Each structure stands twice: as C-alpha cells, then as structure tokens.
Amino acid sequence: MRRRDSRPSTPPRPSTTFVSLTGPAGNIGDALIRRETLEWAAGTSDELVAYTGDAPDVWLTQLSIPDDAVVLRSKKSVPRWLWLLVTAPRHPVLVFEAGEIPLDRGNGVRELVFLAETLIVRLKGGVVVRPPRGIRAPSQPSLGIHRLATRLSQVTLWRDAATLATARTGRLAPDIGFSAGIRPGLDWNERTDLIVSLRGARPLPDERWIRAVRDSAERAGLGIRTIVQVREDEDRARELAELLGGVFEEWGDTDPLVQEERLRERYDAAQLVISDRMHVLVLAALSGAVALELVPQPTAKIREAFAAIGLDRVSVDASTSDPEHLREALRPTPERAAEVVERVRGAEASLAGIRQMIRAGIRRVRA
Image (cartoon, rainbow, N blue to C red; front, side, top):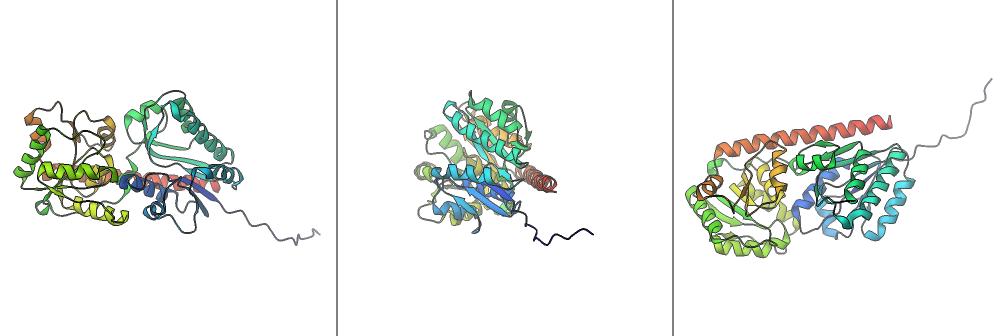
C-alpha cells in the first residue's frame, strides 16, 4: 500500500504583472494614456509592479495607481526592476507604456534594456504587451533593436499606419486615449464655445490665422476660450486669448485631476476645438466636439492617428490653405460632429476588444 505523503503542499507563488508608467506630471494627455495603460495591466496578476521613473507624488494620484502596488520611483530603481523581472514566478506579464517612442541614435542603450526585459519575460513563459504607440525619429541601431523586441512580443500595437510600416510587425489599433470614456456632452445647439489650445514651443500664429479663427467664431455665434492641457502651454494660451478676444482659463494651482475634469466639461460645451496637441483633440472628440489641427506645416502624427480610426480632414496646413479652405475647415457642423462620434465609438469598441483578447491570452498561458 502506497504511503500517503503527509508533507504540506507548497502554495503556488503569486503571479506578477510589470507595467511601465513614466511621464511628465504637467501633461494631462500623457497621464491619460498612462492611466489607460494601467487599466490594461490591472487585474491580470496577483501582484502589480509599476515603474514610474522620477514622477512626483501627484503623478501616482493622477494615474490612480493601487495602494498595494509595488511602485519603483526613480531611475536608480531600474536594477531592482530588472531583478524583480528575473526572479518573478513563471508566466509574468510585462506591459509597456503607451505613447510616442523616440528611436534616435541616443536611445540605443535604452532599447537594449527593453529588449532584455522582453527576453526575460518570454524565457519565463510570460506575456509581453505593447499598447498602441507611435515611433518618432527612427534611426539605427535603435530601430533595429526595437524591431527585434516587438517581434518577440505577443501583442504589438501601433496607432498609425506609417509607424506600422516602419516597424514591419504588429497591427494597427486606435490610440489608447480613445478608451478614456465617451461623454454625451451638450446638445449641438447648446454648445457655445470654440476652444483653442496650442503648443507654447511653436511660434505664435500669424494675423491671417488669428483673423480666420475670430471670423469663424463670429459666424457660428461661438465664444472663444483658450485652455491649458499641458502646463508649458499656459503662457501661449494667455497670449492667444488676448489676440483672439477670448477668455483665458489658467491651470495655475488647480489639482491635475480637477483640471482634467474641468477641461472635459469645457469640451462637452464646445462645437469646435483647435489644437496641435493630439490628446487635446482626442478628449475633444470623446466629448462630441469637432476636432481640428490647424497650424502651419503640421506634423503627420495627428492626421495619421485619426486616420487610423477612419476620421480624415482633422489636420489642415494653415500655411498653404486659401481663405475659402480655411473657412470650410473652421465651420463646425452637427453632421461633422456626428461623424466624429461614430468613429470614436468604433475606436472605443476596438480597444475594448483588444483588452479582452489580451486577458484571454494571459489566461491561456497560465492554464
């Protein structure tokens, strides 16, 4: 007769998810997409380890990082991050942060670290998730290292077709910001604002631009309001309010989460939002406003990210557009707003499906 082993069985080690959540606390758009990244990571394991770099306390609050998470808060903690990856139990999950990836020559060492992280997780039978991202300034060797790391990842998503073509692997997906929640906003006829939010690092718009925006607001019966979604743009918003004869709303000492909600309420009441900040336009679209990038020689980033959800005519080059083209671009209509809402709903549904697919994949790996 076989003797029963009376030794207690060893309980399985808790599973772990690692998520990168770095970013500047003064940028609500960056906080938004990192928070949505955290939503993808949350609940996929027993333990959560978050790397936030040199972010201040307010960043943790903005992202709603759980109190029981292990938070690594400085670049000096990178060795500990790597050690926790190496010593993690089988089947860990690694979720990279969403956003833009600089791949210029100075980022080769960083990409080697990310490749090492990917290899560690794959060798431990885990899952690597790269949420929708864009590539900026691709160059060798950074691009080659990054391509290898993405091929080794089970989930690699890009927020625009040009980046997908550069990466040569993965699939197209909406920017993760489109999962931040659709808001009903006010009825079209109750919306009273034309909102402007431009980067402070670029030159002021010229007189032709100023006149076109003022005329558009007057024709539509809208008041002009300048707002601040990135702290470094505050002085520019003040200048634009003076030039446009509009109302300036400072960020000042307002708590970032309060400021975010205040901005979203402003978008709820806007017919048209003009910006060269992508996530200003994403939040505006989620509130049912017509989103428009109107600047001289705009970069392709905004145009291509919105094209990925099937929405064109978002980006207009103010330096080459004739007066008639400018008037048409600056004319908000309920039909255009309805098109925006339809595309945003599709993007939200697509992202929800991707999130479910990722969770199902993790369950299969651990089964």
